[in-house]
Structure formats: C-alpha cells, structure tokens
Length: 236
Ligand code: ATP
Image 1 (tube, rainbow, N blue to C red):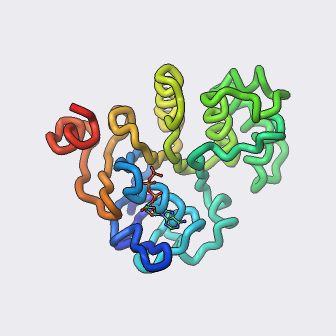
Image 2: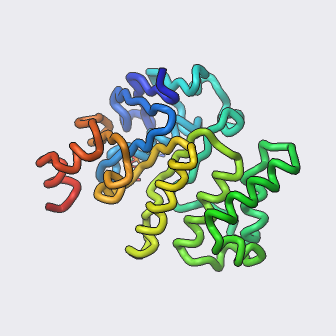
C-alpha cells in the first residue's frame, strides 16, 4: 500500500473547480514531484492534503488514515510536515525560536535536542545564525529555515511547495541537494515545483498537472526525455 494515496480528488474555490479529479500516490522512500505551470493546482493539492483547503470529492489516505476526516492541527502529529510556498517563517523570531516551534507536537526534551542536532548538522548555516532574527536571513537561508523547521517534527513525509521560488541559481542547487539528502536519510518527499528541470532531476517519479488535471505521469527520467514535457516545461 502506498504511504499517501490521493484518489479522484476534486477541489473547488466557490464555483471554480481548481482540481478536477486527480489520483496519485507516494510510496515510502520516494521523492515525488508534482510539476505544472502557474495556476495548475499544485499548491491547492498540497493544501488539501494538509487540511488547509476542503475537498469536494475523492479521498486522501495517509498510512491508512483518512486525512479528509482529520483536522489540520492533527495532521502534523501523524508524521506529515509542510514547507509552505513563500516559507512563512516567523520574521520577528530568531532562527532558534522558529526551529523550536517546528517541534511543537513533541514533548520529549531529549528527542527535541536530537532534532536540533540533526537539523544543525544538515544546515550548519542555521546553527551559525541561531540567534539571528529570521526576517534578516537571505532568501536561501529562509528556505533552509523553513525546511529545518519542518524537519523538527521528525516527519515521515515532507511536503514542499516551490522551494526554489525566488532563489539565485546557486541556492537553488544547494536546496535541491539538501532535498535529496533529506530523502536519503529516510524521509519521503512530495515536491511541488515550477522548476521542472530541477524537480525531475531529483525525483523518482513525477506527475504533470495542467489546469486541475494530471495529464502525464511516470519515472522522472522518462518524463525528462518526453517531447511534450521538454517543450512545455523544460524550455527545449
Ligand atoms: P502557483 O505555482 O502559481 O502557485 P499552482 O499550480 O500552485 O500555481 P494553485 O495556487 O493551486 O496553482 O491554483 C489553482 C487555481 O485555483 C488557480 O486558478 C487559482 O487562481 C485558483 N485559486 C487558488 N487559490 C484560490 C482561492 N483561495 N480562491 C479562489 N481561487 C483560488
């Protein structure tokens, strides 16, 4: 059974249907990319999974739990973390305080300390800057902080929304290297990206979303060589 199974999902904003009956699955250990143009419905899909937007029809099951019947605040404790588009870090709080908030579902002090150690090991720059006010970090550092904060809940799966947005090419590469490392350390990844080239380069499989429908899916390598994907998403 897949770790996360989305079936025939439909989502509306008022009268407008943003998601038109999509199905996809994420198996434990995979990096799955959801690619597509602006407005295709990528963010809406993530928001529906994490309970921020209600579904009209369909099902979302995570490790046997029906997420459409699970309140948003309970979803994190099931082992699902979300790195939102635009990072959404707490600008006035320090790096350390932001990270600590990421562990809010956890009680065991020693485990929280272990998570800090793991996050600082993965992001040495966050440790160097732990007392810095988060709003003064660079865009790339803020993305690292958002990812670090999500990892503080020690998730089984991490959902990332446009991690490359607004970053310089060097930072983009660094962020994607880190996503690969997060995956290699055992966390499953569902990645939403407009940067299809980068996303496909680290993903195992991918789904292409167009105006609320999945129009193509398969191994990331195959999609990278697919003529329609090349033309529409890889600028070739
Ligand atoms: P982007 O990369 O630009 O964020 P996306 O693929 O993530 O695009 P969504 O943000 O999911 O796309 O948007 C899908 C569609 O739903 C768009 O047509 C968008 O205008 C619409 N939409 C998104 N949020 C809302 C909202 N809160 N109210 C009404 N319509 C919305």
